[in-house]
Amino acid sequence: MMTLEEKLRTFADVDLGRPLSTMTTYRIGGIAKYTIYPRDTLGLSECLRMLEDEKVPYKVLGKGSNLLCSDDPYDGVIVKLDRYFIDTYFEGDRVIAEAGASLITLSYDCMKRRLSGLEFASGIPGTVGGAVFMNAGAYKSSMSEVVEQVLVLRDGSFDWLQKEECGFSYRHSVFQSHPDWLIVGVRMRLTPDDPEKIRSLIEERRERRMATQPLDYPTCGSVFRNPEGGFAWKYIDELGYRGKTVGGARVSEKHSNFIVNADHASAKDVMTLIEAINHDMMEKKGFTLKLEMERFNWPNKK
Ligand SMILES: Cc1cc2nc3c(=O)[nH]c(=O)nc-3n(C[C@H](O)[C@H](O)[C@H](O)COP(=O)(O)OP(=O)(O)OC[C@H]3O[C@@H](n4cnc5c(N)ncnc54)[C@H](O)[C@@H]3O)c2cc1C
Image 1: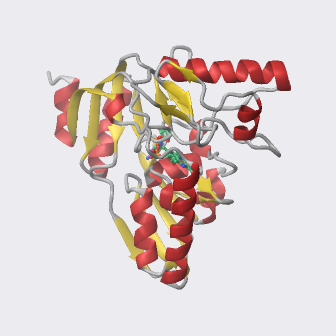
Image 2: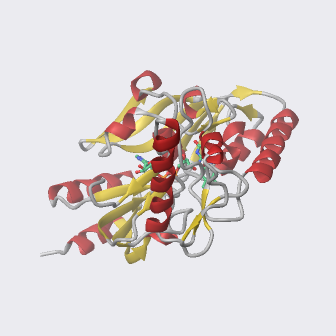
């Protein structure tokens, strides 16, 4: 009888006991029992079938740039596409990207090919799959504006979903309600434009990010969603949380909707700070802020 590990190794590279802190931009998270890198689409579908048959929990990770993983061990399988699913194919003003491709690299490749539409994404440190899942966006643009179709592996079949079936809205997509659907690739449509114009927009945005975001620390980007008609950072500032610290976690001095891993923060440090903010928010403003980043492997939570 082959063990699960042996079966997975037939179709994927397998790492044992890899800390999630090495797979997330926060540099936080406990040890994952298995991490797998399926080698091709057949291997991917076989691995998922095996995990489902054997009822082994699994989680697809992109670059882990929107996750706060708990400090606990994860007794399941992390599925990573950013080793073998990273190709991009250009065809006129369309691009098909595999889900594990880097969004930043893709934005620059589009610029080189005189294609406009992904400038907003040139500073978002995730994969194409993670960006579709989150409907990632910035500067009033988001993935939903360029996505035409998404290739999904669900129930063992590959289906192209039309954009209208993806349920996109602010930082939301249908994939968030279907954690067992795996995004394999994305077809996007861009607009031909002057590469110098595209480059200067990317540069302008890069400078703005450098000036306003704590890019010199590990983070997961914005912690909270902006509530309707307001900015999370303003409310956090009004409560006096800028610079507040719990253990190794700190509300950034530069941008108060970022909580930075300032010094070997644990997931618990970050969560304690988040809970303190929301406790005071409720007391002083009468509402709480919703998380934009996702918690993974927490008790009572996924
Ligand atoms: C410095 C910094 C700046 C940021 N700026 C922005 C910003 O301007 N705008 C913005 O929207 N976000 C921003 N983010 C957050 C983050 O980069 C985005 O949400 C990004 O889209 C997450 O992509 P990822 O590949 O890292 O996904 P992960 O964090 O790895 O995963 C996020 C979710 O997507 C799911 N997922 C990932 N890949 C797949 C797949 N192939 N199929 C199915 N599900 C999948 C995961 O299971 C998880 O639930 C920032 C983060 C950082 C650290």
